[in-house]
Amino acid sequence: MRAGLLIGCVAAAGITVLVAAGAVLVVDSQRQQAHAAPVSCNAALGPTQPGQQNRGTNDAANLTEEQLGTVSLIISIGKERELSPRAWQVAIQAGMTESGLRNVHYGDRDSLGIFQMRPSMGWGSPEQVTDPAYAVNKFYDVLESIPDWEELRPGDAAQAVERSAFPDRYHRWEPMAVHLVETMGEVSDAAGCGTGLGAALPPNEEAADAIEFALDERGDPYVWGATGPDSYDCSGLMLRAYEAAGITLPRVSRDQYKAGAMLPVEEAQPGDLVFWAYDSSDPTTIHHVAMYLGDGKIVEAQQSGVPVHTRDFSFDEAGLVPQAVRPGV
Image 1 (cartoon, one colour):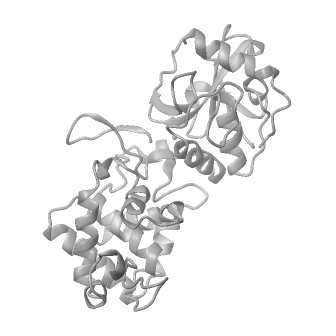
Image 2 (cartoon, helix red, strand yellow; image 1 turned 90 degrees about the vertical axis):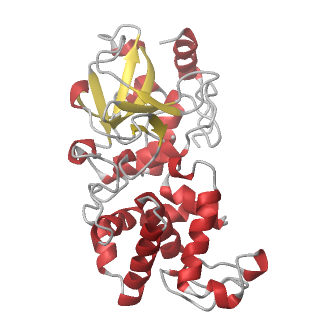
């Protein structure tokens, strides 16, 4: 650990008057290179999230024939255009969010069709944007024009196309879209989690929510003593992440070490907190905390000059405390 990290997180312990109020790097098996791709497997937001084990399946089961027909069209056009299953997923999430995957002839102002495209904004004529095939192709045209769209979380890619005033709402349908891509599109492992999905799932719904929050803060700067919303120190990020999941943590890392069930760090699951200390056998010397994501990754606010990020993690890192903590248990 670098000196800046040690000083930053320890010094924050003295800040008691502050008002109390992150993309996982994965390896693309085809490209064999690391890239920021927060797919469903990140924080197990995808199809088999514990606590909502069948969420994607259940959401899909409630779709009507009209909605399933729209999904089928999205997938078939995506295949014709030789677009990746990720593109189909983005379109499904966007369509479900905007219109419930229905070809509606009404909307906010002049918004129309599956994706609520506005003729006045150059999407096409009213007749075109309410033609399902035109709308799907137009959506894909715009999606493909977005630089590095495949490296975005699908909901963020949908937002980049739609430019909604409510950007976070597209994430709601991620599990369902993954399920539909896998079943109707006949794609195995659309979430990108690999055969070890079960081992990478968080132990409960709160952990999944906390991970989602932490990953969404990626890119925010490290600021000593900060607890958000636009900057964080190490424990400030954990505080807000679990607050978003309905669990209250103490302010500083040394106290967060006492805020849940302890387990051997080698048995940590996604959402568990891992700690570093000057003396790993003495918890009173803890100076840093991060969130374990599974598959040898953590998300953290590390030190000044380094924004909230994910990185590779090893259980034999110097200074790692031998116990992890599961908040709220």
